[in-house]
Amino acid sequence: MRLISEGAGPVASPNPWKRYSVASVVVAASAAAGSAAVDADSDWYRGLSKPVWQPPPWAFGVVWTPMYASIAFAAGHALGRTRGRERVRTAALFGINLTLNAGWTWLFFRQRSPRAALVGTLLLDLCNAGLIRQNARTDPVAARALLPYAAWCVFATVLNGSLSRRNP
Image 1 (cartoon, one colour):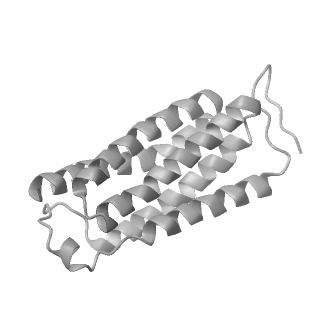
Image 2 (cartoon, rainbow, N blue to C red):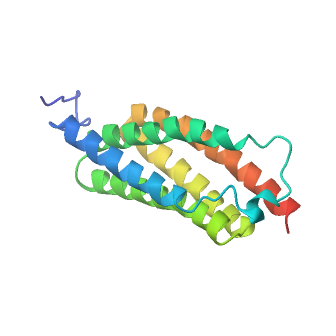
């Protein structure tokens, strides 16, 4: 079924299962790539000076699971409502975003560089702003779905900044 909004508005893709499935697989692959670098039990990580307001390790999995689901939903929804260059741009922004997302853990845990990870998370925040802005024009539902993710990433940036200051 094709859904056409009034005027020159967006057209929903005729196969939502395919676009949501592809988005989910891509997001899951990004999550797996990022989590492959996490080593919260390493002596290095346990030895870092952490702020008292840092969430406990189990909280990250609890938070990231719905965050990744919201990213997959937003991507599937947005890609169904864009065409041509807008669709390519939207897909590219989601791809860049997921690359930056996964890359953060590699910078922080594998490179053991809170400072490099801080740069990575600042870039992720900028990408989130661009992704939300892009989607606000073409698919406000997708843009709203990304707001909790963007807010969590800003919190993660503040936490990363604190870790960088505490562990020069």
